[in-house]
Image (cartoon, rainbow, N blue to C red; front, side, top):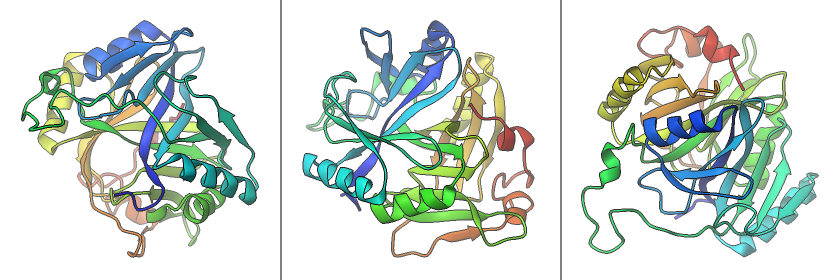
Length: 311
């Protein structure tokens, strides 16, 4: 059951500079299932344990990055209420008609203070998975197709005004703050891990001067063994790796970060802690993020590319 009216991350639209190369990466290497294409050429995909029609949308563009990030809410009534709450908070909202995304109902889109487009929706076609809904099977042929993540899990976004983003997500959208990092020499949060569930996080933000930047899109694996297997598959396909395999202190998740052909960073992630809204958030200092293993438990250091390269 959702802890708020926002259920979970539902989809993300990623810009790729070569659509064929992007489809090969996300479908054949990562192992997502292609679910369809629309008249504009966008490609819709999903992971093997997702039940809704799609979670990843690829759009051909002249620069990499993210167009928008969507959360599914529990009902049309919640969608209406949250739209009103967003307007009361001072944001302009846009209603996007049903069908503009394949198999997806009406969406409410708004730009948050970090410069990212976020949207909410209540309806997307339920298609199930290969395991079935009655007496589900223990095995799917999708398990062995590429890296084969279970689901699209979260994204980390870079932009300004993270203090306002924190207020928006906690006071309007009902998220809670699970962990945060303070800026050097201060108590000011510069990085946020936010939850609408009891996962380690559902979305995260880091302060950055340029608005609207994507750091990574993350895919969830059942175990660290599957993360190691993902590393083997990346090596076999000459996928460039940024960090890993390693484990974070923040969230305690096992991870590999790598790049798609357009330079968008993606993550294969497993494990992670649980977070509930009655628990105070975990605080990390800048020193703890580096030498304390917050970013990289194994090497206990910061990685320049991780901190500076975004799309």
